[in-house]
Image: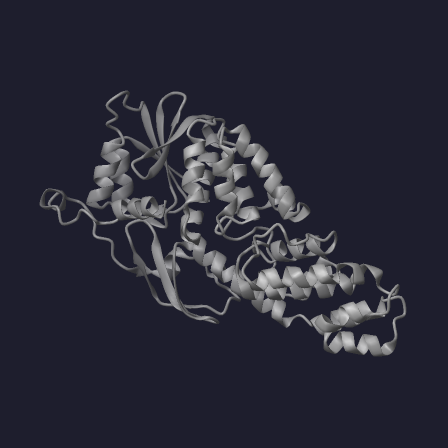
Length: 411
């Protein structure tokens, strides 16, 4: 499905600008670089160590942000993806500041009065000493030490998504709470993040330090009630924290099945590394709010074909925008694809176009697509709505309204 997604953005850009008929049709726009700070709240990258280039490059719908940071030079397409990248770096930075050796020292102090020598070793070399503590002194540690090491190994191998790694009661919960409190998907497949998250959560758990106490040690700007990049908060964030990966998968499987998604498509979605247990739950939560199962299997199949994080973000945001539309105006009749572009129809045959975008320009191709969407040979739509989470240029907004589109913006 990568080709489909690439086609969407190719169509939305200036791919047809060399067509002499279209090119001569004013007042079409040629996307130009814009000041990055004008389209990105300052707090988005605060504390992440990122220095943005002054200008962001447009592709007709999204903006490409570039700059330097702790991992060197970067180029990220879309505000959502940049926000998620910044949150990841910010979380790693805050976790690196925490004194895990001190936490492990507290764990030794709780080890049923284990010998001082063992406590000293635990502080200086916790990973190698856990299993060597006196039998009976820390029976829970002895019983779970091997599972923790295996979990760490799987994280290091990039298997953060794996539900085979044991989700230990208590420890697993702390890991999820800690990640979500820092605004990051706890299953994000980033080796550095998973390694330090595992170490910190283990140290805190065995040291008897709660997540609330941990978050008091980090910069206020790093503490978030929203999982950045997934746009989830409130009860959904609580579900991510309180449920193991296996529980999330079971719940999502049941919901997707109720929408008519075949088992093989569900399995393909779960196997896609760019849809973690948390991000899949965010997607499914939005789909369940659409009020219809028509077309959902095809949409989920497209999601299962995502080849990178930008693909996955795009499909999740489409589902979220449709859910916002349903909340505002009522259920949808079905979801379908116009070539590669996901759209929906209401029960009154109103066309709904969800478009995750940073800045939409009035290019020849946007002109052509917006007209073609209204020319259904069977039953032309009774109305047309564009739902976006970004901005439109004044020319694009005026042209679409003139054509009959209503424009709604969802944060």
